[in-house]
Length: 547
Image (cartoon, rainbow, N blue to C red; front, side):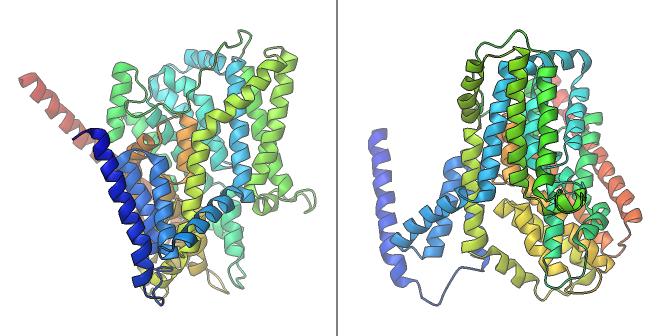
């Protein structure tokens, strides 16, 4: 049969089934049965994730997940489905917080285009290559920069990627590995950094729970030593880098990058634009100074938005009260203006060349913007229309397992964040269940709070629809599905050790006991894994020699 006719028949059959569903389902769906607040609320993101991993195409997968969720909400009422679909997209794209993040993304895209055009990125790459002489040192330098930029995960992902990409490319480090290092030093670092947008989110969430007398920021600080997933992720990066441990799909990407110089291995090569002619006047300062200025302006923008000028100059309160998207947007605008003036004064770019970089920077960020808009809409459908939070609260309403609460909350938070792609929304739901209305936290509840935050970060870390995961792909200029597939095995190993640690911590809620023990367990697990992998590789080599 002709392929065109076959595809036409499939399309017609699909159309007939769809029309039949819109006619039949509303007629047979009982009025008193609703899917809101049930397990079905988690189904749309699961559909999107599974399709993305199977098809390796993220846009259509996310859209199918959105439509599936809205169909369930609207009970296959055609007009209500269309109206809801349009309103959900417009509401999420037009949300003030989301708009701030999108503007910040565009500004960063323009800054990257400017730094490339000015020759700053090339000059920095040449300078760093002379000093960073091995793959190991390049990976550790990327990790170190990720740790240093702890203010916000979005800012971390894009800044670290844009600075270190020329260096890692020189040492044939795959884009998938770069994306993993970026992602693993974004949310996991921010969730244990006292001065960050994440600290502000957690503190605000705790303070808003009922009539609690607890100090949200104090609870956040006390929970840091129990955030095993975040801390063990850092331990893992250092250990696998020093010991050259690679496994899962990541090993194939790294082996291929080393052997052939192909940094992508499979899939498309997104975000890549022809830079055209690059200025010969570019120096290292043309990259370093704009980045430093951007960091400074973003920090100032966040504390200004948090009211530092009106609350007596308290930086901690300012971070707690700030709207991260507004602060980053303010910082981005001033950082961009500074960079433009600096390049004009330096004479490395003309005004015409600067204006040409504006659409180029915007185009470079279009893939990330599209995925974010789809992901935000899908999360909103699951969280608000289908009431995923109510489903989780119903599960935990009668929880009486006491000592096992930390491990239980870790697993549930991981599942919710993976399915919905939001860590903030996840610990926003769970912390409200853990924090008591009055009084102090018991040791077990404090560990449970940290477990909820750790599980949220873990689920967010491995979710294909997480905005942080998407931005890590954008920062590394990696194929998004490649990043997700190669990252999951590493994250799950850390999650497994974290789960065991939370099981023990429920009985021994002492950070000075559990933190060293969890680190020993993590390093021991990686050493055992390395031994197993080395034996397997040796066997493969022997078989090839025998052939």
